[in-house]
Length: 627
Ligand SMILES: Nc1ncnc2c1ncn2[C@@H]1O[C@H](COP(=O)(O)OP(=O)(O)OP(=O)(O)O)[C@@H](O)[C@H]1O
Image 1 (spheres, protein in one colour):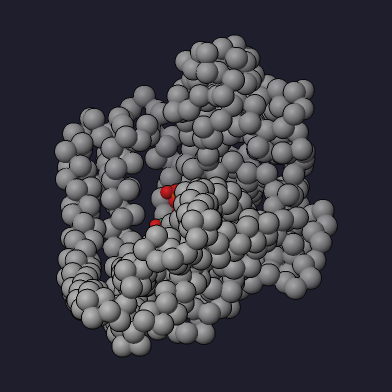
Image 2 (cartoon, rainbow, N blue to C red):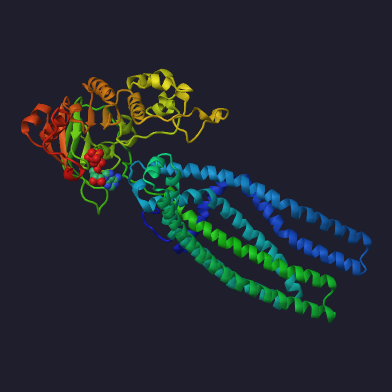
């Protein structure tokens, strides 16, 4: 299996790998549309034979006119030549139609396979790996284009070979030496073209990072999320400069490649002209000496030109096919990538939570070279308990809840759902039992209904449930009064197809309104076994925050939940408060117990309480002194 984390240069693939990739591309094209593959094959053979037929019919017409053939025969040859001419016009169009049809089918199939593969990555690691993201970007293009291109170029090679065989046969009949010279000139051409194509694939891989960064800066310059800061901080010129710098890197690499190509193609052209010129001189002198008829000279000239053109097609298409194979490697690497998290061969079903969730000596870091984020955490979240996680920025709170959802596995230790290690459970079932509002929740540029309905796809069309969840999050009135109610798009980047007549109906929501939508989405899921709330009210006004927390407090009573909040007034009612510091659990207990302990929690609580008191605190804790 290809490991996508191995960053190899695509230009260095072995023969066996290339053969394997060719086979898989062929299978993909065949599965996408076998009829079109067969039609292309038949049309290609026809197209390959047409130039040879035209050259021979021309010779027969010329010799018939200058010799003693009957006029009936000449007319037949001329009509056949006309028919070949018609076919020469029609066949390329029919071929292009078949190629486009196949291209569309392959794109659909390749996209389905690619995004199926992407959806199979149940964890987050692959999405945070720059090398993998680079492959993914190339795979998106290669998957769409490479199989169709490979078929087109493969058939192009076949067509060239048919034409060339026909003309070489013709040349052999007139001059063995000429046939040999034309065939010999093909070898250096083929070699040089393959080297060029490998060079281009290498170059594309090397500038992939710059290409992605250029795209990133270009997007920042127009992104609706970035537009405020870009304007306020005057970043426009700076970002444009960076974008152009990346573009210059990409262009420089392309230019180097273009120059190499120009030099090589010039030399190859010279070689071709030399062979053709020598042949022409020989044919004219042979005709003068009476060894060839005028028709022979005509078919000879057509054969030299036709062989060289066919050779050009073969060489060009082989180089293109070689390039497509190399880029198709990226597609295969993604589609055949191993799972990012080890999955049990037969995952155990996830039963409703009975006793609780337990972290046993959990150590975690985001990468081997990174510092530990969680250091030997032991923690039990009993069923039915409201647990609060508190601690300074970067203490590891969000990381801990990501492990509960099994977005990553611990490096050491384990997480248990009622004594069963999460690693043996079905990930999908586990996640169906969890409801969550993440700190960096999504704002989907879709309708209000979809933004809430995504919390439980089965309820997407259930108006009463969607509105019930929105009512719970106190956003129902706001959404119902939008121009198209719940069908209003919560974006002004796109407009609905149905909205073409009035594309101005999309709206922007405020930060707090978005947070309510995210809460409604989490609460659409029916009674989850575990509810995760990571800073669920940071964007709400004081009244709404109080109101939501009162509701959450009632909702959480008797349900298993983990709440992360920096506002300690909102966690004081929790059954268990856990204080994380530097990835370790440093305190745990109820609010009164932790206050009595006079430790981290009490210090943070005092600081916040003093912030609300009439008198300002003696020491001001600013960003610098807070550390
Ligand atoms: N995807 C990631 N890749 C690498 N490092 C990460 C990633 N996510 C978080 N970290 C690092 O892990 C540490 C803990 O982050 P985490 O988000 O868990 O902290 P937190 O306690 O939730 O902080 P906050 O209160 O600011 O939300 C931080 O040092 C952060 O830089």
